[in-house]
Amino acid sequence: MIKRTLVILFLLGLGSLFIALMQGYTPDTELNLTGRYYAEHTAQDIGAANIVTAIIVTYRGLDTIGEVTVLFLTAAIVGMLLSRGNHKGKSLQRELPQSGELLTTGSYLLVPLILLLGAYVFINGHLTPGGGFQGGAIIASAILLMLLTDPLRHFSHQLITIIESVSGLLFVSIGVLGMFYAGGFLDNRILPVGDLGSLFSAGAIPVIYSLIGLKVGAEFSSMLVNLSETEDS
Amino acid sequence: MNELLMPAITLLISIAMIGAAFVAIQVKQISIAMLAAGLVSLLASVLFLFFAAPDVAMTEAAIGSGLTTFLFFFVLGRVRGEQRD
Image (cartoon, each protein chain N blue to C red):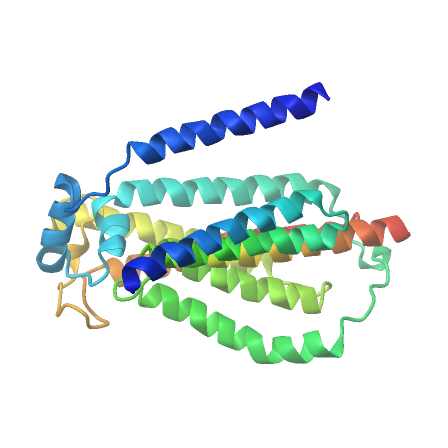
């Protein structure tokens, strides 16, 4: 009874807080100082049609490295925790029920398409909405679909690790190259900026975003594969 | 027309989100609760799209409603399989 009253009181307090926020809210009619700078300078300085991508990869590239590192740490910790109960013997695995015909056939059709969509999303990150993180998550969902279809399917941990570490290393070294050949760390102008809106434009952004996409996809996939291979099942 | 339609759709989606979230915590069957939680994410991504944030909408749709929901089902299958042994 007391617990319920407390919950209701908490919700009421939260609601009144939001209402107070709502009443003090006036929508901005123009961009603020930082926003205006990004909106006016992205097209000629960075050459990316998608301003959000320009901010994520170039203006705030250091934050992106931090995010990727956090994700890497998460994947590493999940792998470390789950590999503890991991015995090699396949015979211990209990018999799993066959996955349905619909799922099996559907996954044959859908997995290549989903992988293609993921690659499209991160390669076109500087032109259309989306980018490395979204594309990586889409790729990982294709891996998840494969695991759902056949839980005993074996994925090469070595391949995942190599993709993950090579793309991470290349990402940071492109950032360092920017310090020598362009304005600073993660400056995208080490490659020609090109025409606004074409695929090979925006300097190093497509390269960096593809690397982020591969890295994020590999990290999510390694988490899923580790989760699926725990022997306690 | 548009000035009236946008807030109406936004309000409708918000109410549906709150409803789905309520279903997710109240319902007894775990699978329905998972689907409802995925629905909250899906509606949130539609809402982000209405607020002209397609990048955030894609992240929400891919991770929030895609990966997380499937991961929940995956783990549920694991847990149920263990109970049967």
